[in-house]
Image (tube, rainbow, N blue to C red; front, side):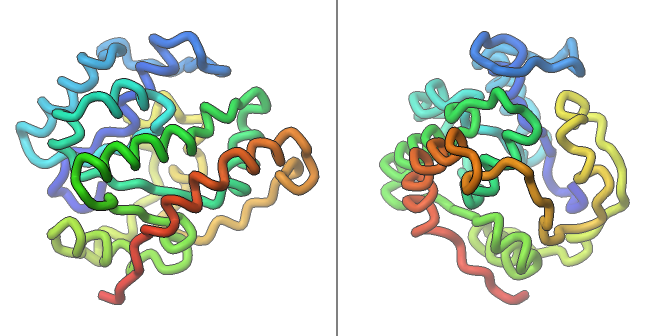
Length: 225
């Protein structure tokens, strides 16, 4: 968001899943009444934002994976990036925030499906960024990412003032740490329930780790600026 050369949208498709859909295990209390909630409306919202300048948007694949995987025209207009994280950490983190979370909401299987669809459409694997690289070597990882996108790496954009962004309102309970941050740092959070001591979560891990490994094999290699 600090770069200034992109319009930034935060999880626009979350409205499709958590506001319009019926499968979510949690609801959202902080909803923008003017935000579209159907797939076509959100798609158009993104494209309209792109008419002003390039758009960067992050989303969770569980929100719209079926529609997105089938929307080849839309996928072709995107430079798709797949941000992955060790599922042991993802699962524990999700569970701490929402003990009713399902494997589908964690979303690695759906992420792999979209990864496969994009790879098939483009004839090569899309960009994959591993969260561990991003935490351990933020400048090097973002520099490598910028090189792949063909945009300049801006060191000044790697730090920011701690603040809550209005567009985070729908997820304000989940973004407290982000709102207090001033840069990318190693996540040292520990969780009481993990894949090592909770059989239910272990089942999620065993189901999802093959999808993580598939994408991890294509991850971006950090490059010093």
